[in-house]
Image (tube, rainbow, N blue to C red):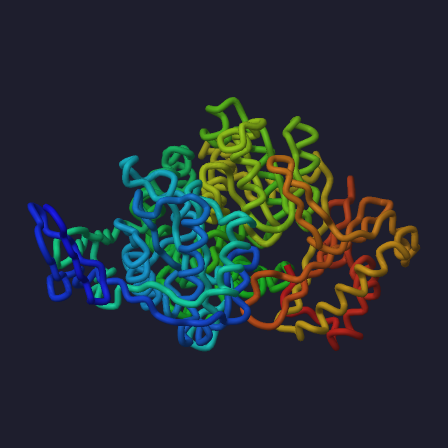
Length: 621
């Protein structure tokens, strides 16, 4: 009342007391925010914080370095707010694949979230939450006024974990999908100009091992922040139960002539495997292989392929090239599957039989009506594959009249197609199935690839072709060979050259890019190159353009050779070489034999030995 002078010489905002204020009021020594006091820490840009196709991945010790994680997280919060998101409304979700530094990073993000105005935080119990489960939780968990506006996912996916290995972070938006290019570019731009970050240094550490809510109130009672430790599995498993016929799958699993094993590779999927297969389906824990999450994946490489899932591959009677091996009198399981570190990838195996990811996608699309989620909505409408993925699904789409899309590598491109109507008011392509040759498969139930979904999709299909338990089991191999007889076979393989010198890898790619015009029309071996180009994608939904997405050699007979530099490596560079040849009738050859000539042509076209020093790949899939 009247002339009032309010002074605050402290380093934090103070609350003016309720009621009548007159004269001079000094708030300097009054109670402030206490544990919620924001500290502004000076920092400077750190080079190399540009996210790849699935977030920022570096060596763990890099993330543990001074201000490295903090700079990226603050840059993300700034970009999120600049995009129009009100972080004080709704909830921020945090979870990870449990790799080394996961717990410490979660505590840092909680403290920074509180300092950046977030009032409600959800954290997966034990700090664990698979990438598809995070997408499901963003989309499904309520109530509406608490729904998540986004999530930080702490994962380097299929990369190795541990103090000497890789760590990663990515941000997913309110639709449950990875941040679009516009947001990731804004985050990166912020990392190049950052001068300070916000953190509540005195915010107490939260026990993330026990479910429950911790509420931290400011000392002056003006505000509060709640941190709720939620079930890592609940939202995802509940969603899957609405998609699949769990009764039909259980009937298949209970058959005396059917057996399976699920290798979680000591990644985050272990608790999900136990929740679904042991608790829901009533199966023995003997089904669960390597289902205890470890911060270094037990010293292994949690990448579900023939090379790294060697324990499962051997159990299923195969070698690292997918060839059968002598198992003597040992009974080989009917079905085998594996997951990667963050649970979004999958590998499918039958008895002494490997299903390539490209064939897996095509088979699921062909049998989509075996899954209630699709059948109840009038059937599948659209399918999409990443450009390097084989064209096997293209033939199914043409036969069954599905909309078909070929996109760059990266799940965010599929997300746009899924949200064409809901967000962009365009054509509705859902229900929708999509996949990548890098062992990623999924549908529009979430906005990430989903390894557990893919396994349940396969079991649903097997259940549908095995309705009578008194008849002989229709196996994985039976199903795939029948598919080949109808559609022909796209022989396919991928060679990975991991940890190569980045400058040399870039030089190799640049040389092929420069030679695309001169290579077009050239005859190499028995093949004639119809087109050599660098794949460019114009998004049919939002019109965005993605360039330099892979060097392609498209042969006149439909065969393809493709080269990409991976955007997901934690250090060095990974060159991926993709080989594909279609055979309409001759479908029973070994892939290595069918592709030998084209592989030789590919290695000569890229001059691999000249640039890299070897033609021997690290991994063959």
